[in-house]
Image (tube, rainbow over all chains, first blue to last red; front, side, top):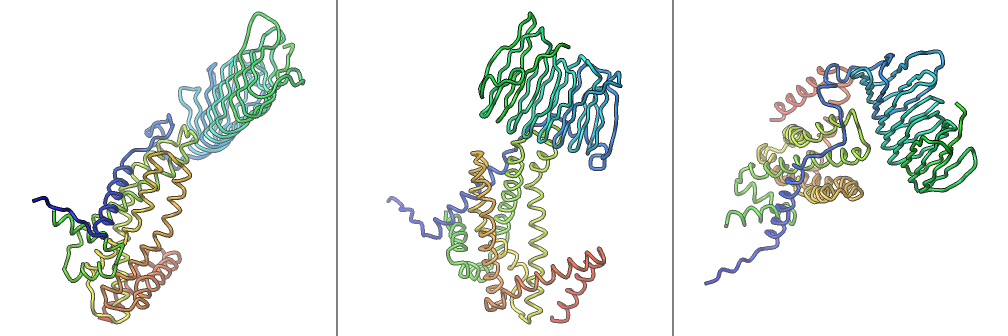
Length: 230
Length: 218
């Protein structure tokens, strides 16, 4: 004889609740991943007490600045021979003499005139201000924020701001060709102060054998390429 | 099979007819182990999903240096949630029990109340399940909505606690409201003020005062 399974309303509600609870419990066991690169043991010594100001000279031709929340200023300083960095913030560290990290605060990188080096900048949320520095290569990654200012460049520039804007005046030597790619929803590309293209622009300017690449990815971008006699 | 049906019936009854469910729990002398298992599961899922949801929202910004701290907090959040909820359950149930005794009611057992308060966490399963779906689908607006929905469902849960107090101590809903909400709130307020002014001594004074009141009223 076939047994008929009959459930009362309370039992049905109970079954639904139990299924929802088991489902929620199972989902809550899935680990969450956050994009990061620092190791826990890197910060452990003096984790929540390390706060303050430090100033360090950097000999390397490649400098990396990594900040979670805050502002980075890169400035030209004709009075110095080697670059140096000033950090005012929480959890500041320096690795291998050229990677400077900070959780939150303000960082200023002073570069000598005509510095021939590579600069990498990574910011979670914040701003990068370029105050007329001389750079050969620049790579910028910002999650949310902006890049603004003026720079002198003789090498490639890759700037990515996932949510935010780029407002940049870029001075390049006259004998170099510049291949510019702008990938923005709102954008304007200028050459020597005159507008030449809107958003999603890809243009090559100048004459010369050597070519440099300028790639911009952001929500809005305003880039002015200016030729400079050097 | 009969046992499973009985368990499902008891869970469903808490939502459909909570007074009857609590009455049966006390009359049949059911163990508090099952409602405690529900309470621990709800606490784990709530703590874990709330923390992981917030971390996932913040995680849209790359945190190069602090990301590992967020991951660590999120991974431990379930266990932290359970520990905090169990402490809260013990402290709160004791407060309600003492409040009922202060009001002069002699009926009702503390361990039964623990089981009934644990059962009262059941309505929270709905927003938690919604949070689980949105977490799984990375649907941020739904995740925020489900975290907000925890507030009204907590009020439902609080209403069940008032009924549980009323059933356990055989008192009216009004007196149950005083015993389960008003007096514990006043005690938390006094404890907060005294602890802020005197530190740990303030907390000890509050506990000693409560114990003295309880013994005097017994």
